[in-house]
Amino acid sequence: MFFQTIDILGTIAFAISGVLIAMNKRMDPFGVLIIAFVTAAGGGTLRDVMIGIEPVSWMKNMTFVYVIFGSVVFAVIFRKQIGYLRKSLFLFDTIGIALYTVVGIETGLIAGLHPIICIALGTMTACFGGVLRDILCNEIPVVFRKEIYATACILGGLTYFILRRVLGDENYSFIIAGLVVIIVRLIAVKFKISLPSLYRKE
Image (cartoon, rainbow, N blue to C red; front, side, top):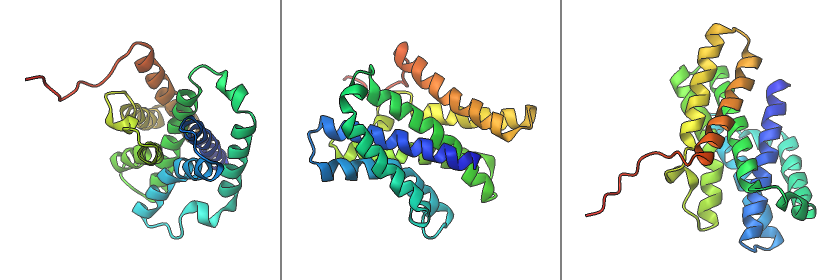
């Protein structure tokens, strides 16, 4: 129940982020729905396919489909109020990657995977929906820019496994790991910390 709640919260956050970018691109209602759905379900779909879950989670549990539809309707109706939130797209995207990182790690643990693979799975779960969203909206995916994005997910995953050894409580470890993802991302953006570029002027 605890992790399903986190999964649903992550779905809401990513669906809203998809709605926001789709509306910024002036898409029609169908386009907004598709972008929201791809953003919210893309990472989980890749995760389930990679570890052999058939059919993928959102096909077996209609709750996620209803949540995505509900989030789209909510975001469209209250778009002006959401717009008042400073950098609201960044906010929902950051919350989404934090929640999906821990959900991906938990899924990997249930499948009996090595901790390093679990961290990779959590990172892919968190990032892939946003990658699809940005590609469909003709944007360079955030994860491929210099911004601290996937790195924050990796640090959150490492934090979880360290805390799991120290605290022994999985729920607290997951919560703190998610907070680490959010804090790292916020600090990186606030102080303009980024990974070095490989591009070199001739």
